Image (tube, rainbow, N blue to C red; front, side, top):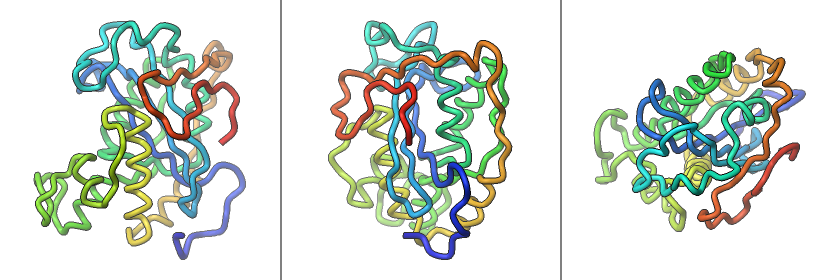
Length: 235
């Protein structure tokens, strides 16, 4: 449990741990192919998890990395179809990710394509936390014990094993575990929670507000606690 946090707010509050797979490395040129969100409350207790494949409306990119074939996307929603629901999952929460700036850049680009501006929200990066814990800067390739700063290496250093890398839900779950490992000793967490509650989020309008596509999890992910299809599920 985190200590010294401000009182519980009305409405969503806590952390949204995100991960995504994409068709390439550039948020400007490439598209989100799969995304997952793991919700944690202010005391780092799990509240829900959501994942879906996303139709990128083009090539799927490096299948040898993310394992997604074009035929896996039959029935997958486009980003516009999940954009409104995703806003409700992120609203009021601190954005958490492993190299979270990359995840945010892709989300911001996808929202820009559907005519919404993703607000600047407080963030926490487990890669940065791992580097700080090791007493090294993030740009250095290895921490003091010889581990790299990839999610796989950081998870191994924290004793987290038995997960499915390069799947959005597997990576988001592992990032959430890593975050709960680091957060109790990390500085500035309470301030970020307070800042997240104060962010004003856009409201979807028009066609985007009416879109509410079924979320579709990949079938080759051995999920432990997944929600295969989400429309109005609570978190």
